[in-house]
Image (cartoon, rainbow, N blue to C red; front, top):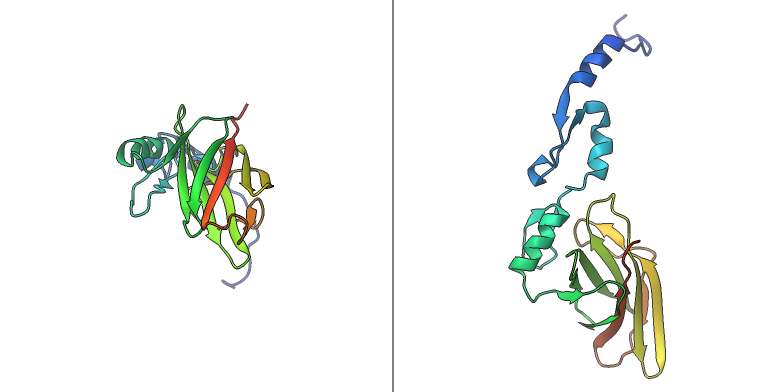
Amino acid sequence: MCSMPIGYNRCRAVEKVLECIKISCLNAKYGCKEMFSYSVKSDHEEDCIYIPCLCPDTGCSFVASSKELSLHFSHRHVGSGIQFTYDRFFTVFLNTDQKAVVLQEKNDANLFIVQNNRESLGNIVHISCIGPKSMAGFHYDVLGRSRGSTLILQSVTRIIQSIGRTPSTGFLLIPSDFFGSGQLILDIRIKLQH
């Protein structure tokens, strides 16, 4: 008798009691002060701007919200990233085996990562932005020029919380012999969101 299904019966009284109980966000230790009922917990935590992000500097284990991470990077890793301004081209030099370069916008201090993965056909390059999942991506251009030829990628940044694997789309494949010097020379423009 105990193993027989009882069906799905809602208990409105219990639902009302559960709605009255407020819990704090999982990201409270990173600055989120939101309190909400259990039923909206997962929705909030998916969009929370305080989601923890890992410092992109190799060997640094600092974890914080993207805003705090930007401040940390500006003060603790001075000179290890490239400063840039939205809507202007700037040049980035990468060794073909260099995994990443950190970019930091001069005004809002957003952090971007130029990721480079060396593959058998050449180098795969793409740009990501460190931030909360709810953040919109930034449009960007990457140009590789060599001996009269130009490779161009126009794409949108993925929003990440830590440096990860290469995406399956939205990257620039630079053939192994394109630059010839063992160094990638890329002109990059990241566009301000309007």
